Image (cartoon, rainbow, N blue to C red; front, side, top):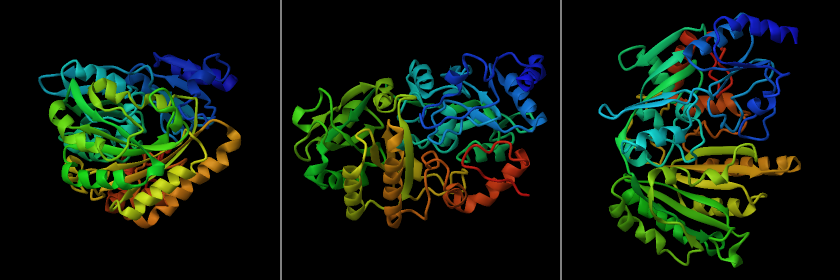
Length: 464
């Protein structure tokens, strides 16, 4: 308690946010993150209101040699946003978004959620590629890539990151862009939270919506792979305008026939990156591949599409373990494996998905961003989701076994580092995923964080 008081005294002169310690009634609510498996207790939570507060919190942690965790949206499956016995820098009070419609640029504070960005930009008929769940934090999703519905036409989130303001490991606030500290911008474009606290992002915007076409025909897994194979072949022709995934889930609710409740199904979810009427006509064949269990297709408001998946992942209600890998190709054998894995899921809440790439995402060269190679055509993710702690072992095993069994279809052992389990494969998986870019990332890490203060992430250790 005395140490906490001393930390408060150290911060009080330079800090305008909220300081929350273990004795504070707010402590448990604030330290909790989206994955209910994560239960860590920081020594101090520094809820920051501006960049100056972040600088003060970083300097305090450095002075006391305490670990630093950074909470943006708190949505990372490994719970990197919170640490034990360290300083948790909480950006949840920093959710501002400002839009320059004429320049087509949005400035986004580091604690913003994607729904904040979508709401602000759609007022001007603009958008930047975000995620699939609107309460995901902008920071976490972006810094490891950012795969969303607009990737076919506008690439990943990092491909639209044009500048940032970052508090580095010595408490310095610096700006990075193509003209100022460009090596840091390059590293932020896929290198994760390894380099500092991003207090503001600047994103390029594109004309999108307000109405877009969303197709979501749903078929029973028990009816076999034919619709998935047709969807794969369809995307081979149209993947430059369609962001899509085949998601395996469990049928239930009034939108499904009662006789299908509890059965495993797959949704061929697609967003057409262009005119809604044109997209409706183009995507119609995906709704004619057999007898559907349900169909959620239609022209929708862009913000509504961005929130469609929110109910699948309510914050704090579920225990989660996710693994994903990139695939060189989506073969018939890989499709069969995905169907078998979906049927074997021990929890009805678990999801698994096949994601397409191509289009604008594939056109970015491997050395243009820290993210690296873009030649993968697909991604396979296994999202274990359950509620009972007694079921931890079975559900984690399901995700890991499906991930391991798909290795023979993988793309050079690479993985999407936002879906990397709980970090147990960290070092080897991280090195493989960055490939030839890894050594350059290490150099930049060493320059900006030589003591590895920012290590709660898919960590890249600085040079000794």
